[in-house]
Amino acid sequence: MTAPLTLTLPDEAATGALAARAARLSRPGDAILLDGPLGAGKSAFARAFLRAAAGDPALEVPSPTFTLVQSYDLPKGAAHHLDLYRLEGPDALPELGWEEARDGIVLVEWPDRLGRHAPRDALRITLAPADAPEARIVTLAGWDAARLNALAALA
Image 1 (cartoon, rainbow, N blue to C red):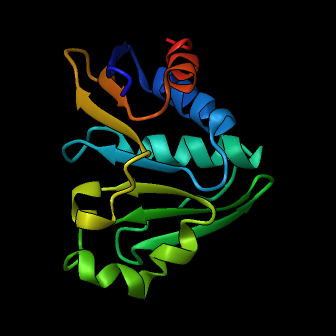
Image 2: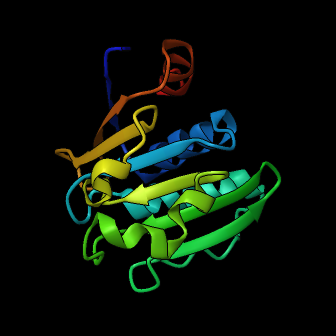
Image 3: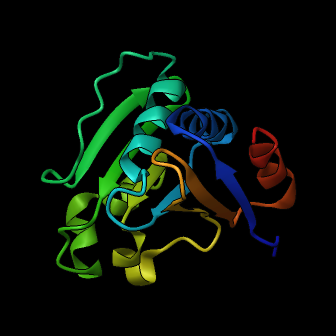
């Protein structure tokens, strides 16, 4: 298991650049679990990831807070953005098409709601506010060392 890497990102642009790097490194079957408190930048990361993966900086990326899942047809294949904050529990995942979504790339906000469905090989990104208003402390874990180091090389 690769040791987690911790980065300090000075602003939202740096968070977006990290998300774009993750989009380039991701492939179908990957799960990216976004953890952190409200306002930590999970949705901003997911939005930047999806825009980069689509190659469209103007891509409409609504928050799946109420729909729970938003799906996208990207050049690499399907991607699914899940916000599980309102999920009753892991037993509700089959109704959301979790198993089918795993064939593509999944970005999951509030991954603690996955329970036993959390993929062991997922990229886990924990975001936390830092001292400056837009700064974030980011911890990366879960991918193999080569992919994790390539992701962190951006910072």
